Length: 272
Image 1 (cartoon, rainbow, N blue to C red):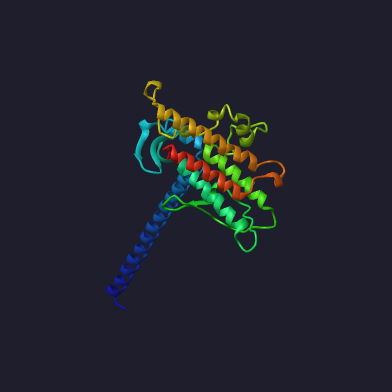
Image 2 (spheres, rainbow, N blue to C red):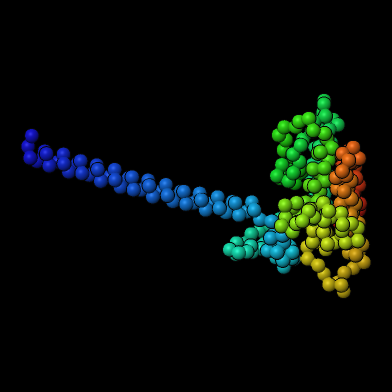
């Protein structure tokens, strides 16, 4: 074998080795970048999943009209800044009747399971994370597996869902300590201190942002009064749904009928 041929083999071997090393370095770098990006995405996702309603309320100035960046028939979109990292977020705040429609859809789904299937079916896991909204804001109840528990348990769970929808507070909120709980918090406020527990949107009369006393019209005051009266009725339904004795709780059919009556009243008053 000639010296020139040996040299060519050595040169080619070196180039192949160099290419392999460079390829490994590039792959390793891309892998690290992907891991870092995935970690950041996961961190941001965890942040969004753990944001409380109270934090969103603070970030948007109580869903102030000054922070509204868009509005539609179902609600408004507010921009806000979250502490402590100053993350800018856009938050959808549903109008009263939209929230009520969601509650009615869920109650109707449970009523179907309890009374209109071949055999009564108990959902056993009615909670916000199992409620799916489609493009028309129609609520669908995600169903896993029921068991031998009573349908009265579903009524109790729906009552808790009503509280979360209309107060904007979760049972796990840090504000509930020493056995207070969301249920007792609302029960103690009925009926005279209802504004202390309702979502700010309901207290403001169903409109984003409050006007001064001089700007309020008689019609607006009527709407505000009707909205608060309806809110009291809704929260009283929740109290009946959580009576200690399961047999004394409201049936899902009655829950649906009562909520639909409240919605019809609000619509007649021009509250959306």
